[in-house]
Image (cartoon, rainbow, N blue to C red; front, side, top):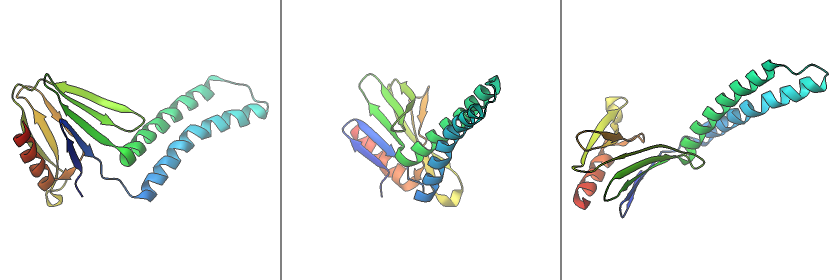
Length: 159
């Protein structure tokens, strides 16, 4: 299965989904990280204890953990990178479905495509690099190197 799709001047790189059980566990823990402090505060207040700053600190810390886990869960479920080859710029963004992050752009005076190997050598995986000699955009989506080489050939033909 190809992890990329080129539609006109928009390149979409899709994240390979993690197993369903792993995603389910990650969504469960992100939900629990949001729900536990709130339930703890209500339970404590209903038992007649005083409200204090510790509740807010716990709510903040567990909220950060839950937010981080939610982003990882969404990336592993719906994650994709969109690279738009516009005339004045090359635009990049990481899309988590509920969040859009990592917006970058470079001026495409001369566009060079490359591969950066990732992980173990025997895995034969890497990421796509798009650069203009001064700055570069490095993809996060790990793909087989053979797919990246195929994609680079297509991109060189179209530019």
